[in-house]
View 1 (cartoon, rainbow, N blue to C red):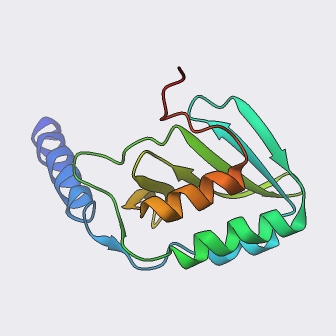
View 2: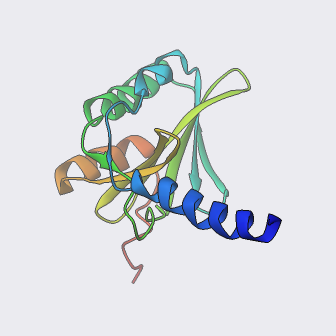
Length: 140
């Protein structure tokens, strides 16, 4: 009896969880980033590239996130991994993250990692705020 229960429970749980994976995230809750006093730009393997404590730059990063709060989703194939991201902190408390990919943004929201496309001009503006070289451009 227990094996039958487990055999039914696991596939049912996976099916129910996957039903919402491609549903749009209605509220990424980027407003939580407004209390940040520090941001750390990192690679996808957690190598710190730059720490930002300048309030004006943090405000611009937060405003960028808030202005890009729509059209997020968790693709069925999985959220792509951005090579760059910025982690926001208030003191030592982690508030959230915002990743920059080749043509997408990524972040944690609605219980999952989410992504959305990004316009090339907006991507360049965010890269300027990150203040680090673009890892997607090959060095000559």
